[in-house]
Every structure is written in structure tokens, then in C-alpha cells.
Image (cartoon, rainbow over all chains, first blue to last red):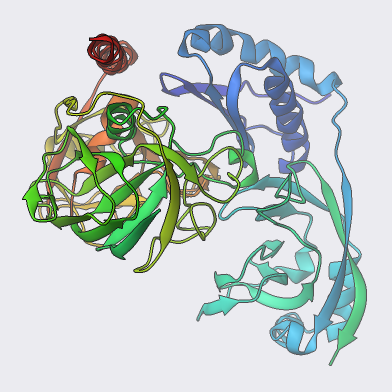
Length: 221
Length: 312
């Protein structure tokens, strides 16, 4: 029998509610699945300008501050309901070139864990990753599901420019850089998969709740 | 058409920004003082959400290649047209070939320039023409304007000229609604945050106003799960120097929040420049709502007054 500790619901300002379930006894992913479902329910209500899931929490931006009291009292009930909701998500396959010029840090990651480069590629490409939420920069996805054997500290000397499409590991997370930007994660590969295109009708390829997998396109030495 | 001769420290195209995409990591952007934007747009007969130029610090120059109605608002940058002084808060008729020069702002930081007409910009992105200076999209080319950049604006003369309107008063007294993490931070830290004056550090920009104080720092070692942040969120990094997030801020963050600047007071950050002092006060939701209603009624009164003037 799973128990839920009750969510903490705080008002951030006249039109903004913070719903926090980070103290839940379930795993981050199990709790997050309910957060996505609650986000979907809130989005469909039409009462919000923005609905932003983050790390086991949800921030709600109201259209009309007069709806604040209603939502403060209704959220707990909705939270109990949402486990029954079916959540729609998309699965993405990202063809990835590992190592060589595309993954300048893969040898370091392998060496750090006493693995071969092939082991790193196998471990990284066999996982299914969940898009927990997006943030940091447009289209950047916080992913869960990295194999513990690949947890690697960030570089002590961050790069001033990490190419767009770089697949990298930072601590307990893996991620893809949607645009060329500075960054301190260990770069192990590259994908041509377009994560973010501001001129597209929906600029981000991923949405919170989607699943992704990295498929091996090439392993370079 | 208008041409930027000198953009000064920073000049960018902004409207009221984009909403509805925060869950994709796309921030708001938009004018830091939306009231200045709305009021100067109304003075030249534009819709409220028409883009304007947000001009930081001044030392800028713009050449007009058509006759236009224009209005400046925000801080006084001792503007001149062909050498003749013009006042912020009033509309003027500008002739083809005229040059608008802005000197350095002395008592504020940002000025807004409305130009009457239809701005022929690239397709709006997610409902907004605002330049996102961090993610580099929107506006003319995703960046602040450069010398030589031209904006195609089809002039319209839809109002009477020589109209003036005041901005709601500016202030360095910032009202804040208490944050979700104040129980995690020490009571002493919260007291210090409220009881000290803070000054704006030089590393501030449209992403955030970074604050520092010679007398106090609010160091901590809290690490929290990431949550959504927005313009007005007051983050407290471990260094103990708060950051008030502004329009170009990221959408999520992991630092504890001291509180959220009430919506009505966020516009004051448009005029706070490096070195300026400010202080904070915690207020109730009721007070935040009243402050917001006061601004809304200021705009409503202006609307009625302009309709009356234009009928005369």
C-alpha cells in the first residue's frame, strides 16, 4: 500500500500557486508522473496562462487572480484524483554518434568508472529516459533514468562553448544541449535530432512526460 | 522606416512578452516597465501591446525616414529632435529626416519609445515580438539593435498630437509577498533582508537585478529541488546576495526564494541602475491586489481622458 504525504500548497503571489510534493515517499519518477497528470488537468481547465512542472512540484499562473481561492481548495482533491488519469506522452528515438570528435569526454567517463568506451555506449543507449521537466534554456530537458554506473562529476573547467546537439552527462543526469552554449557536463556524443526550432509551430520537440532513448548511430574511437 | 544610428548601452524591441510556453523553458521577455510601454503607445494611437524600443541608459540616436507620431516615456534622457528638447510623456510629430538624440539618463535607467504605426517585423514568436536577449530570438534578429539596423514602420496618425500623460510614481521601496522557503531560511536572514538597504550591482541585466550590501550577506547551504521562477522571484544563492529575476530570466531555478516582488512594483526595476539603493517590505496579498488595482485604474482613467481629448 502506497501512502502519500500531503502536498504543500503555497501562494507565491496574487495569481500564482506553488504545489510541492517533493517530500513524497515515492520515487521522483512515480511522483512526477502524477505531477504531469495534474499539470494536464490544470492546463485543460483553461484557468491558467502557464502551468510549469519542475522537480516534483508544479507552479500555476492564473489568468484571473479571483480564481486563486478556488484552486487553493481544489488542488488537494485533484491530486488524489489524478492517479486515475491516463497521461498522453510521446516516445522519441535519438540517433547518436558516440565518442571521437563528437564525444570528447567519453574516454574520461569510461576511465572514471573503470569501463570501456563500448560499455559506456551500451549503458547509455540501453536506458529509457523520462523528460521530468524543461528549463535552464529553451528546450533543455531534465531527464531521469541515467544508469548509476554512469554518474560522473561535471568538468572542473566548464567549456565556453558546447556544440548544439551534444549528448552529455552531468552528475546524476544526462541531457542534450538544444543550442550551442557554455557548459560543464561531460560530452559523450552528438545527435542531429532537432530539440528546439524557434520558427517551428511547436518549437520544442519534447514536452514534460515524454520518454526518449538514444540509439547508436556510430561509435568513433 | 526608422534607422538606429547609435543604440547606446542597449536598445531592444519589446512588447508585453510571451506567455504560455514557460513549461518548455521559454521565458517571458517584454518591457520591464509595461506601463511606460502602454502609456507611450496610447499617446501615439497604437494598440497597448504594439512593440516599442526599450532604451537603456541613453546615449542613443535614431533617424526617421517618414513622418511619424512619437512619444517617449520612462526616465528623462534629455532628448532632442534636431537639437530641440522634447519631454518624456508627451507626443510629438516628427518629420522625415529628423534625428532623435538621447543623452545619458541621470535619475533612472530605461526609456521607452513608441512610434505610431504598424511595425513590419518578422513573424511574432509564440505571440510576441519581444527580443529574448538570452535565448536570442524575436525582435529584428534575436539580438539587441545594432548601429545601422532599420525597422520598417508604416506610419499611422490615429490620435491628436501634443497629448501628455504621467507615469505612476517611481519608488525604491519594493513590496514583496513572502516566499515559500522562509521557514527553511533562518529568521535572522529574513530580518536582515527586510531591515537592510540593498544596492544594485553592476552585473545586473534584463535577466535579473543582482543585489549586494556592504553590511550584510545571507549565506546559506540549502539545496532545493528546482522549481519554476518568474520575473519578480527573489532568489537567494548560497553567496547570500539576492537576485530579483526580471523579464529575461530562466523559467526554473534551484535556489531558495525569499519572496516575490508584487506585480505592481516590478516596473520600478526598469529605473534602478547599478549603484542605486532599494529596500524591501513584506506585504499581504490584499495589499498586492490593491496596488495592482491602483495601476489598472490609472490606465483606465488615461483611456477615458484620451478618448475625450480625441473627440474634442
